Length: 390
Image (cartoon, rainbow, N blue to C red):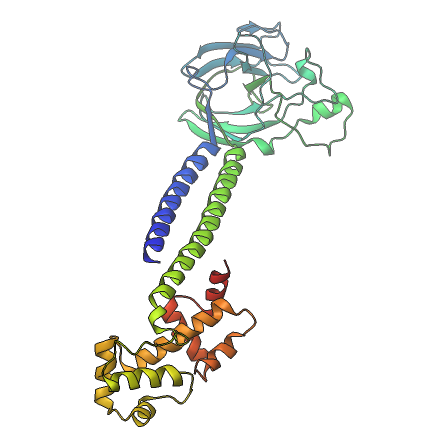
């Protein structure tokens, strides 16, 4: 069994190391980090655009009342300026990251795997800005009319010293005007970011009018989790460890059976039911000792004193005979004989209970018999019987 346990330990250590390596790899891959800025190597291709309250799609525009927005840089970082014209109605200006496909055409992207976005924001002068993520809503949206898209948004502060901003994409708020425009219930605040045409950084109703603002956005990164890696890891590890467990129990049973057979083969000279040949024992004292033990081993009260009385051989001579002939003391030889006979009965007779076998070979205490048997054969009598049956 020693060789089997060494092999099992090596297999366990290798499987454990492989599991840890796979776990680290899958957990790392499950954390999504898609960089949008700098634009070079961005995981989601995009091009820059602008928008304002007059809805004229141009990179630099100024409406009749004076609202303007201009892009200064849009590769390494997004840097733009805007001025809101003073007017009684709501004014806004924004820079848009318009998503595109591989051919450079406008496209919708699926951001539902991402749960947050982070970036560095710097403004001169300080301002409160808004991040908006328009998404297609099946109830009211039409592909050619971006104003019909639901527009979940979040506000963030922006200072001249620079601010790190982290926004939870699952907790964006849809503006009330959108619900009013389509006569929708305000309680329907759920949304899906599965068809997003752009991300927008723009002014808010708190942005002062008739003031030139400069905004700089950098290190724009989307964060999320791809649970498919975790599910895959769980499936692989469950299969691997289940396979190891199946192999271990099968191999353990096979090794146990092999060891049992080997022990039975080695113990044939001690089997009580086998006739003892007296020819090798020309010394009558040796023959008398071996015959007496072989015929009285099942007596629960059998001890060295009874053997001395039954054979007429003194105690020291009796132990010397057993040590010289078989390499055992009296007690060790008696237990060996009893346990070997018990092993034979367990392997050949399924009808006898373990307790009956223990009593029949000379043990009055079943627990003591179980202890000695396990020390001799490496398993309990019941496991030994099962192994022999297999």
